[in-house]
Image (cartoon, rainbow, N blue to C red; front, side, top):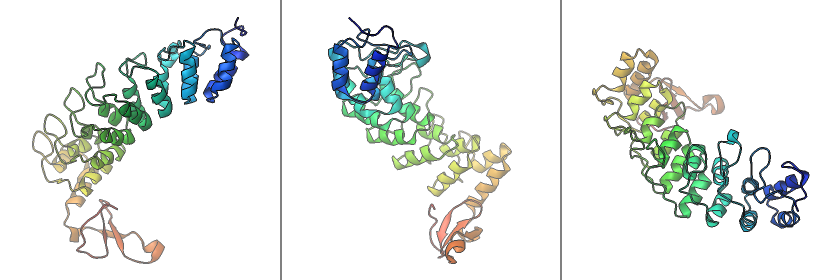
Length: 319
C-alpha cells in the first residue's frame, strides 16, 4: 500500500528529489516501499516522475521508471505547462544525456511532445538546444525536410526566427542546407537573419558557407534589401565587410540598398552606405590603438567601421 497520503506527500517529494539528483538506487527503494501513490507519480504541478528523472539526466533513473510502468511519453497533466512530455523538457533545457536515454528507451521522436504538436527536434531548434539536436541526429532522427507542423517550415526556420545562432551551426553540421528555402513562403534563413537586431545568425550562416549576397527569397531579393527594410545598420555593415556588392540591385525592382534607403527616408542608412562605397583612400580613418599604445597601426573608418593597418594600400578586413 502507498505510504503517501496525497499527491504532495513528503514521500513523493523525496522520490522526486532522488530522481532529479540521479539517485536511482534510493529511488528504487522508495518506489518498492510505495512512496509514490501511483506509478506515474504526478504531483500538483502536473509533473510526473519521468519529468524529474529527465531533469536529473540519469539513464538509470529513466530505465527504472520504464521498468515500473511509467509512460515516458506522457505529457504533464497541467495545462499551464503546455502538455510538455519528458522529451520536451529535455529539449527545452538542452539535456542531451536525458534525450539520448529517452530515445534508447523507445521514445518516438516523430511523436508530438507538447500541446502545440511540436516534435522534439523543433523544440530543440527553437530553444537553441545544440546538445539535443546532436543527440537526435546521432540516434538517426531525420532533421532535414519540414519540422512536421502546419507551418510547412524546416528546423532552420525555427532556429533563425528564434535567433539561435548556435542551433543554425549545429543543424548545418548535421547536414542541413543553410542556404535552402526554409518555409512555404519561399524565404531562406538569410532573409530572416537580416531583419534581426543582432548579426549572430548572419555570422552563423556565413560560417556555414552561405553566400550573403545571393538571393534569399523566391522574388530574388537579397539580405541587403531586408537589412534596409528593417533598418538594420549592423547587419548591413556585416554584409559590406563580407564583400557583398552594395552597388548591385537587391530587390525585385533592381534598386540597390542606397536607393531603397533614400526612398524610405532613412538618412542615417544613406550616410552609412555612402561611407561604405567611398574609395579606400577617401575614407575618414581614426586610430583604434593610440589611446592604449600610442601607435597608429590599426585604424577604423569613423562612419562604416571598416578597419585597416597602417599601410594605406592594405585591403579592408573585418575588425
